[in-house]
Image 1 (cartoon, rainbow, N blue to C red):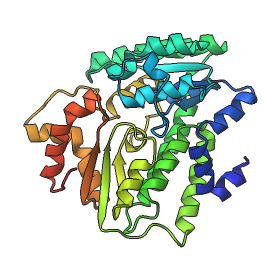
Image 2: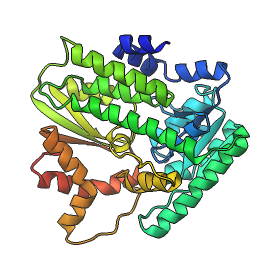
Image 3: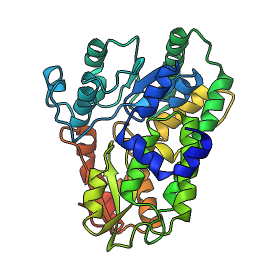
Image 4: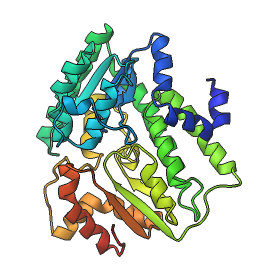
Amino acid sequence: MSEAEFISHGLDTVEKYYQEYGFRARELKKQGKQVIGYLCSLVPLEIIAAADLIPFRIKGNPHEPITKADTQMETIVCPLIRSCFDMALKGNYEFLDGLVIPHTCDSVSRTYDIWKYNLNLPYNHFLNVPHSCGEPSLEFFKDMLDVFRKSLEKLTGREISDQSINRAIQLYNQNRALMRELYELRKSDPPLISGVEMTKVLVAAMSLPVDECNTLLAGVIQKVKERKNGPVRKSARIIVIGAEVDDAALMEIIEESDANVVIDDLCIGTKIYWADVEVTDNPIRSLAERYLLGIMCPRTYRKQKGTYQEYLEERFGHIGRFIRDFKVGGAVLYIYQYCDPYGFEVPATKSYIESVGIPVL
């Protein structure tokens, strides 16, 4: 699809890539591109893009029963990972040339060998991401990102220069800025784009090269601003908080219940689009800082400083700002079964949100 078609079709293109997830990756594979699948928001896509590879986020499908995965993986593994693995075993991601799995939660990191053995892809990499935020952790993570870079150089047979990484950083910073601009259109009452539509945009974005995604986002923003019949005003403005919600069904349930979903704190949403990467002479260090410190994920330990309320503000203050800026009236916490990091976080999250005067479901 040409750049002009991307812009002119807007949400229609989003719908296509949402319904036929992986369609564009298959096209690029046929054109000779190598596609690298990954799990989780902690994989630095800039390094993959700098290697002239296509990053592709593996997603599950809650409408598809998990059958094959349960013959290879414990059923107490989080249903998202089991669904992702099930889709891969059933051939939905046959176009992948490689897989990157980061050290995040147990359901992701402890299943690496199962993915590697069963998919038998030409390239596999386990990215060791530290769980704490101090300077030693940053130095360690920087070293791990260098190892990651070298592994991709070995795969492609090409050097990945600091300059190429910085170019990729600039493209992804542009991508994050465009996505934030789209989020801004949800501040009005009613929002200009619904929660269901926004979820589909976020999912489509996970499947595209960053330059194509930027063109698509520019087109969506233009079309949303011009539309005459957008979402209607409903009785509540909701924030949805949780891990990876990569299907619009939850948003449909909420919005069919006379509410507008106007903002999120999700792994495919604001968590990955609110923090940019600083462009410096040391891009690997910049990436380490952004992916370890800039993504507010419960798998990363942050030592308590000051009072408990100050600690909650440090960890969840971004949610408080979303509540104020988007005039949120209620919060929905969506926690996957067996998701320990988010499950253990519920009491503190609920306590913080209620402290700013918002009811929590």
